[in-house]
Length: 78
Image 1 (cartoon, rainbow, N blue to C red):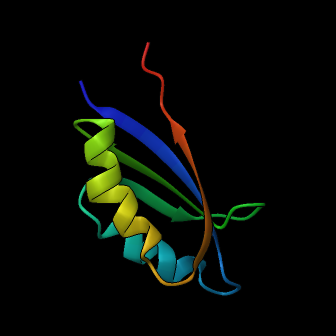
Image 2 (image 1 turned 45 degrees about the vertical axis):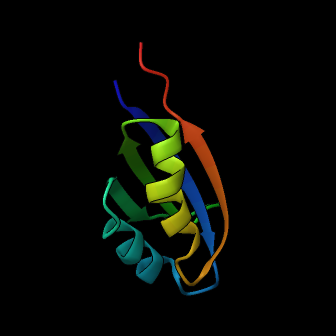
C-alpha cells in the first residue's frame, strides 16, 4: 500500500506556472496544476511510505524557488 497526499502550495506573485512545472518534474508527483483561490498550485504525490514521501518528495518540493507556503493533506483510502 502506498501513501498519497495532496499538497496545496502558495507561491510568490506570478510564480504559479513555473512552480507547477518544477514540481511536476519531481519523481512521485502524479499531478501539479496552477489554480486560482487561496492556493496557487495543487499537486498530488505518491510514495511507498510517509518516510519516503518526506525524504524523496516533500524535501524537493520545499526547495523549489517561488514557494512561500505548503499544506500537506494525506489521502484516506477506503
